Amino acid sequence: MTAANGQFDQGVPSSAIDQNDPDRLMVVDTGLYVTSNGGKDWQCGHAHPAENGKEQSGLYHSSDGGEHWTLLARKGPEHFGAFLSPTHPGWIYMTLTEDAPGAGLWLSRDYGATWKPMSGLPFANAQRITFDSANPDQIYVTTFGGSVWRGSDE
Image 1 (spheres, rainbow, N blue to C red):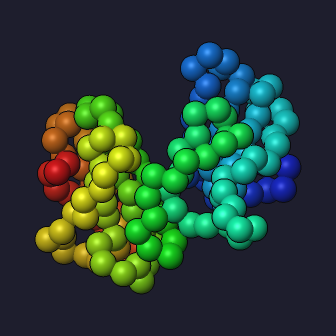
Image 2: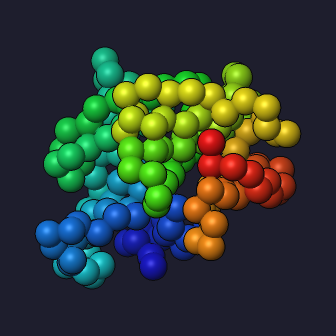
């Protein structure tokens, strides 16, 4: 998949299909991109809400296709990603970039209302999370250094 400006050439980190309109797809890379015609044309959305005219890092939620945003968490200077548990409704894992202060992996069990750092991990940062389809209590976490860690989803 490639956007008009080529931003998707290295892969697509996060995407969502509108449940009410299968031709509407939203992709988050270095910004939010939206298509309403199955990927023929793309428009840039507003992935980074501004506060006082300055873009802010954090984890945001939109329930209206990106028109308005609500801050769910800001735990460091830069956030890398959010990953939704396929087996635990409301569970969100949030990863921070390298050099983040404190924990690099956070978990919310209430749709982002509260957050708990995942402590005791053998690494200081987390890049991506994937879920084990054969064992829903297992997750795999990759780090920016290229390591892969397997552990409990809690």
